[in-house]
Length: 421
Image (tube, rainbow, N blue to C red):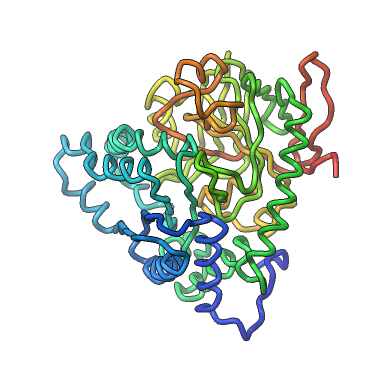
C-alpha cells in the first residue's frame, strides 16, 4: 500500500482503530446531539462497527438507536427467485418511517461496504426497475437529507466481498485487513487524535470553499483526454466542503472520508463531452470508461465499455437523470488518490478525483435555497431527480478553468492540482 496511507503503531489494535472510527462517525460525522434518535443502515458483515457506533451514540446522549441490516444473499434470492411484478415494489412503509424520523429530528448514519459486483450477472431490466421503485419510495427521506433538514453521514466497513474486489489476489483475511487499514487511514482514524486532525482538515476545506464563493464563477471548464466540458453554475450557487450546519444548526460532516468542495451546476447550462477517469460501481454493476455528450444541460449521447446497459437504464430513470445535480473539485494529491487504490465504492473514489453527479441537486448549495420551493430552486437552475450518482472525471491530466461572470477565464486547477495555494 502506498505510504501516503499512514502506518499506525503496532501497539494500536484493530479494535482500538475501530473504536476511533466509531467515535469519528458520531462526533465528527454526525455531531450527534443529546436526546437525538439515530437511524443506522448497515450490511450484516458490518455488525462490529455498527455496535461500536451504537455504543458511542449512547455515550453522546442518543435517546434511541435503530439499526437496519441488509443481506447480500437475500438480495440475490430476490433476483433469482422473485416474481417479475415484484421488481416494481419497494418497502414504502420503511422509507415513510425513515422520512418521519428525519422530520422529527432523528440523525441518519449509513455504513457502506456492499459487494461492488453483487448484481453484475443479474437482469439489468430488473435491476433498473427495482432501483426506480426504491428511489421513488425513498424520495421523501432523500429530500430531507439533501435539504440538510437533519444531520447525516456515511462511513465504511471492510466486508469480505468488498475487500476481495479491491484486493483480488490476496486471501480473504489479508484482503479484509488491507481494506480496514485503508479505511482507517482515509478516515483519519489511524492518528492519535482523530478529532483534532479532522478539525484541521475541515479548516483547509473551508478555506477552499470560501475562496470559490468569493470568486463566484459563472462556469467551470474541464479539459483533458476525452474531456472538453463547460459546466455552468446555478444562479446564486454557493460552494460547500468539509463540515457544515444543518437547518437546525447542528455541525456535521456528511461523508467520512471527504476531500471535496462542491456546488450546484445549472441544469440547462452544461455543454460538451466528458470521459470518466475511474470506474463507477453502481448497485452491483461496474460501469467503466463512461463517455457522454451534453447539450444544453442534457446528456444526448452515452456509452461505456462495461455496464452500458445499466448506465442507459439509469439515464432513463426520469428527466432529471440526464442532467447534473453536483460538480465537485478534488486535487489529484488527495490521500485517497495517492494510495493508488481503486476502492470500487463512490464514498472513497469520489474523494480521489474531481467529479460530477447525475440527478438531484443539493438545495444547501443555493443561497437561501433551504427556504425555496421546488419551482424557485428550478428557476435558479437546480436539478430534480430520483437519483444522485457521482462519477469521476478528474485526474493528473485534467485542467480546470474558472469562468467569470464577464466571460473571462483563469486557471483553477492544472494537472489535477490547485493553482492557488
